Length: 121
Image (cartoon, rainbow, N blue to C red; front, side, top):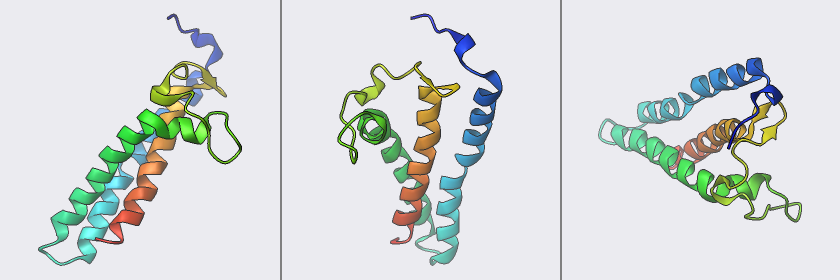
């Protein structure tokens, strides 16, 4: 499948990639912060938990999470028409590819999950 790169703004793509790279560091930082709040024996548990949250969120986001959040549905939940990102990889989302938009939203999904799960460790 040939991608028409003229429909995308290269500056926006570069900006989203830069922001994604910077924001990816938040999830391990949350683990380190919670490790500092816990005892010495449980510090690695907090770090491992945040990395496990990152792995689980990434898998579920690419399988069904993006589709439930952003595909057409009943107004509250989307349907599974974009499950596994089928038909949504190189479609434009504004001036960036949908896959890049999905990656950026995944970071916030993982960050919120790491903050909420890390508070219970």
